[in-house]
Each structure stands twice: as structure tokens, then as C-alpha cells.
Length: 336
Image (cartoon, rainbow, N blue to C red; front, side, top):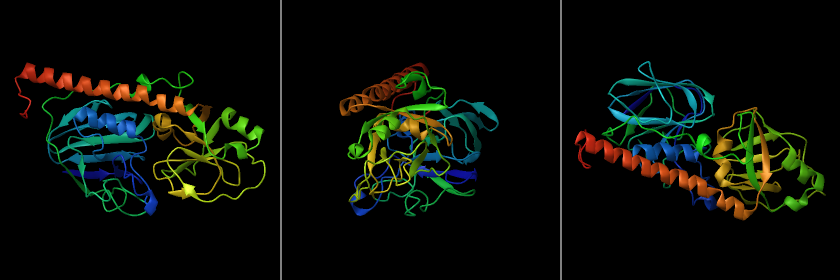
């Protein structure tokens, strides 16, 4: 079991989401940075979609009431286990009663605490994710609070002390090295791109858009010179997914994210590709982003390095754990 000792607003239990219910008005939800959750779960030998804790506000502290193995991914921050510094992206095994503390990140925005076996909360519509707008999933459909307890399903791993290079160190940015102040994202032109003036189309790709404080898990609102339509239009509502860039009447774009509305009617000018959504999830309020046009084929191809990174990580973990077992004499079915 895990006991939450200290938490700020909007920290929740999340997995990879609940697809397949948008036609019923139920959004996908799930983690903002699915790559960080997948990495944590791979390191622990979990299923890719096992639930973890998504941190959006800090500091955060929990007590591990039973011995367990865990990893914190997504961010670079001061992380301590009973006052001893530990590294992010590194598997650690804690004894029963030890306290894990995560401070504000120096890099990144959203951290993920993954534990061996995953967080065990009820499955609702095929997912353990918290749907805050609907008030269901996760722990009673709400953010975590001090005093909450969470069940965990796994036993401590027989080996620990290994980890992963963060995606930012492995996956190349579209425009070269990023410094955290300007995030480069690839995007495809969307259905209504032709409804915008040539000047607006050019501005979309050349502006350093700023993420405003009016941003959350539903979507990031971007500030910059407005994008104008060729003439006023009224559109029928259409299905919405994460990554779609809508333009309200004021002309400043909104990028839909994990808690995206299921339908919308604002003109669609672009769609951020799936391979880059994790970069956007780790961008803080005030960060500037630049969109770079790519084709559908390029967007699909952009997932190959991500898949290669994850496959390589799975192979590394399997080899490391097998080697450690041989050194220690632990059989594959045993627990140390």
C-alpha cells in the first residue's frame, strides 16, 4: 500500500487512457506524457498501460507501506528516499515504511511515479485513469489528497539500480538541440487549413507561440498574433483528439491534449503528430513552441525512433535482469 503524505492540486492516478468511448461523450483521458509512463513500466517489468501517479504540482511525498520497487520518470528533479537522493529514470527498491519525496522539477513539467505491478484502483470503462471532468476513474474520480491510500499489486523486483536515458537525450528534436525555452513540434495541416488567409498560414509556422496560464490537461492555449480566416465560417461539430490545433474566433490557437473535448466546432488548422505530443506535455506555462509542417507520411515515420527506443529499452531490461539473476543465483521464477 501507498499513503499520500503531501500533495498539491491536480496530482492523479493515470494510465494510458480509455479509448473507444468518444462516441458516447467520454474522453480518452490518461497521462499527458505516455512515453514517460511507458518507460517507467518497461523498467519495472509492468504492462505498458499499468497505472501510475501523474504529478503536475509539487512538492509531493508518499510513504511506501510495503517493500516495493519504483521509478520516477518524466522530470529532472530533487528526489529523495528517506532523505537520500536518488536519480530519476532509475529503478529503486524501497523497504516498508520509507518515504519518497519529489521536489519541483528543474527540467520538465510532469513527473510519473511508477511502481512494480502498477497502482490498483478500480477499472472504469477499461481504464484506471482519472477523468476529472466526469468525476470517475482513478481514486474516486478526484485528485489525490494527503491521507489517501493506494493499493499496489506487485512485489519488489529481484534486482534494481538500473535505468533509462531520458527521451530528450535519445530522440532528436525536429530543429536540433532544445534549450527548454523553445519547443519544436511537428504538425500536419488539418481539414480547415485552407480556410485561413495565406498570411495566417505562414504565421502559424513562423510564430514562437507562448503557452498561456489558461492551459491545462484539456488543452494548451497559445498566445501570439491572431490567425485570420479568409471569411467567417460556421462548421458542424466534429470529433476531437489530442493534438488537434483549433482556432477560436479570437484567432489564438488551442492544442487539444489528454482531456480533450470529444467534439468541437472551431476551425482546425493543424494537428501535432503523436510522436511529439510528449514534448508538449513536458512544456511549462510560459514556454514558447514553434510548429514545423510535415506530411502524413513523415508523421507516421516519426514514430519509428520512438518505437526503437522503447524496444531497445525492453531488450536492455531483459538482459540486465537475466544477467543479475545469473550472478546472484536467483532463478527466473523466484523473488529475492
